[in-house]
Image (cartoon, rainbow, N blue to C red; front, side, top):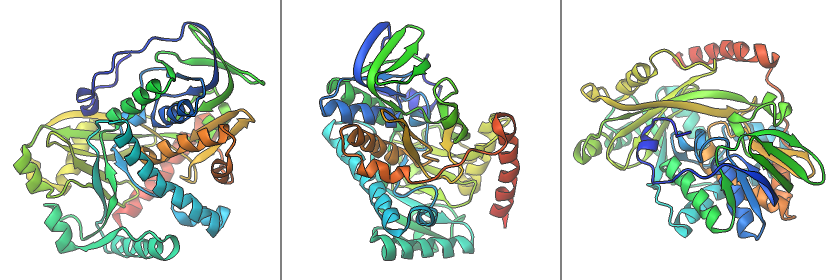
Length: 424
């Protein structure tokens, strides 16, 4: 199975398919899922000397890790107020610090393993409405006052327009410590680093059964893996064969991206003076950034129905032209989508199904940096230092209402309300 057709797949570094699992193997740890979370877990454990096997049902980076908007930012989709309400100010502050460390971990891994992934620094949240200005300024004050995060700088409308050739935004919060990258090349780089450290990676090896015990047995069509520990890093693609319990706590959400034809360096810089990633703060948000070959990558437009909206490319292009109407003459070269996994609270869901079976899921669109950090946390826990991992297990999570048949229609109705709020 190949990666879906996307700009990322077309510009990915060569990565020949890996063999599927054949026969029976043993390991200290078996990791399920070849995204950033799984590859990071495998890398961290292999570097600690563990015998690691990673099973990926399709290709490394096939899911959200290889298709996303590629923005590496601090914090959590839930917002700090929800974390404080559940775990208190002190623990919420420690969680926030972990999210900031996640960006440094990413930066160091790219440098240490020489991962060529077009990593650039600078990310800006932008305001469309006056209430967005109020929200962003209050957020900046909270970050500095409660979390000691003084990096973001407020930009007035004039300053935003010096960076972006658009009249859509009336202010922005620019963080030079956050950034963006080519997510598929980053994921492939992590996988190669994990293999160099001693991990074995099998692609095309969908797990059809998981049997718990002192040694966990994972069965694929081609063989089995018996391991002392298991780390489930399946995210939006977890199924009932692995854990109906975990599947019920996340909702796969479709998001879509287009890539223009190459604009050329001069036109691209006239459109976006600085190579920063940009996100508005609507509930149904838009995000965009420059590519290394001077395209505009523009995404957003979530779908909770599980169905690709009709003519996604045309709809996403129309949203792009609301921001940059001067691109009306530019064609779309690539259009693709994929699923991210959200939780009811939009807080990450980490924990254990058994003393030796760990899981990571629910990154809710904040996965580029946080998934890599989560892999480090689960590796620490397996190695006997579980304090930071266990901090996140204190977060409470609920199943999506309605069961397998009704929860998606219920969420679609809820999203209609939030889309109406974006218009106010």
